[in-house]
Image (cartoon, rainbow, N blue to C red; front, side, top):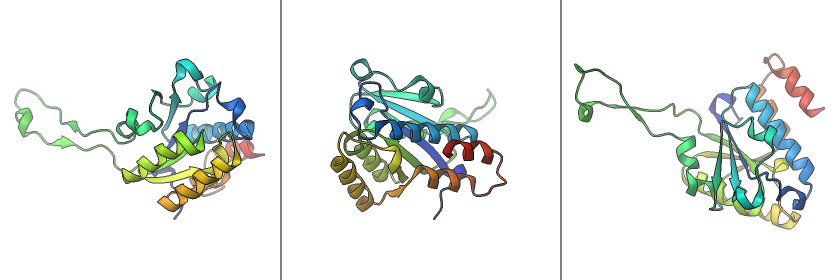
Length: 200
């Protein structure tokens, strides 16, 4: 099964100023997160960010925040506990009407577009906030795609243990380039040249 840009949403977890210097290969991890965010922007894939205790750990980089539709501050390690599921899968809206339409209690809810069930997720720390968020998204029956080269922890051992656990729970493990080329599907896609330039 390939990723489809029309079915995808991107979640970028906690690339914060006071965390990144301690992350193993942190510069590469952040660079890949920026590649994902730029490609998602060009391909109109909804992108969301999270920040763990931003008063203490700082914000995500401004250029990354600018590519997110919204950045959720959180204190829980899993962003799902702080409203991420509701952002990814908004509740049905009540149908509009006028004075001659049915009373509100008889109006049917208008379901939201259910098509974006593939969550492409990356972030730090892989074994804490990324892991707990991804596991809860799986419990919510999303398809979860973890971008391994855009994830990090302070140690390789913790990062790799997170990947093992996520794969065992049913998440797909992918790389930044896998995501970008699966979103594109063809060299004839509009943003192909821009995305190709991101990885050169």
